[in-house]
Length: 173
Length: 295
Image (tube, rainbow over the protein chains, first blue to last red):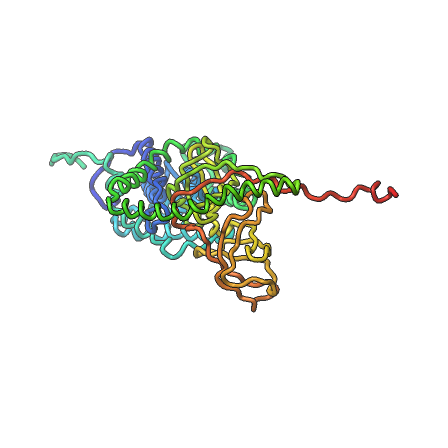
């Protein structure tokens, strides 16, 4: 694997435990009580989308479902609300994984934005149908702040896979 | 089975197609949502799974605790002095009322004894502090720092110094979740203090309350105070709840009555979880048949 398909840098293979470790870590971020402060990034959705794009064969909708349920429980939301959203994010990410790997990080972020917005729109629809109060347009700010973090987060999550650059002019690749 | 009667080699097996998997999981999610929001079947599952997420939640709450404690620590002397003066003034006012209260209580008990009415039971209460707003942006809920260990139960009323703020809806071991009166799904039975007119008060969003199912010709006007009626057996009767802000009698059969909460529902920090009120009197039974036949 490379950081993106156009890059010439070869990465080490990803470790499966690191994928789940990063997801559990972001679950902890999602549990930080920020109240109704607008624009808090949806960490779990972001990291889930990242791994579903990088490693579509190792992680997918099942993980989205499980982590969504855990977020629902921790945040006191309706059971299945985040699960539904994350399953859809995982599906869309996996669906566009092959295409997205050809783009640089900033353009990847632009592709991820509609996925996160779709997830939020789904959650709003479900809760409004159940008779809840509309949380205001600032609710959707969270997707935009999440997407701003795409590039730095990609770098951080790929750090364990980078290997030192070898200055060996005779190496075949 | 392929054409020549062989299974495909296992390296190509990837389970059901992504779209099929998506549909299956979406169906499961929708079932969960309906079961939770409509029928409330999943509280047991939620309690069970929350045991697993509990350590993570506790760890995640630490930064918030730290920020809150730090702001306490750096409270200025001037603020403390102002608070102190304010509290002294309030204590003077309430002290005088308390003096009379004891005497009134005595008198009330004697009168009730004379009337052979049931004594009102004293209720146990738990003082609690609001830790933070619940993160779910679709509802108006807060988290208290007292839970099942201190005897908080689902359904108990929560009040601040000025009136009712909400009801306990979920209880965790050392925390509990309170649904505020302004939540769209929260209702509370009330009566008008001036004339005893009864109604049910609902949250209507934007921090306001709405008194529903009161006929348009009812005797109610802006400025009326609403107190709990205690008919539900959950809230103690007579707790102040809200004040009528506007009455619109142009609506259909029922008047549209907008109310302002009296308590600092979205502001107060120190609250009291009140124990259960006495049970409502048993429903009147159908007249026994033999009595009708007797003489």
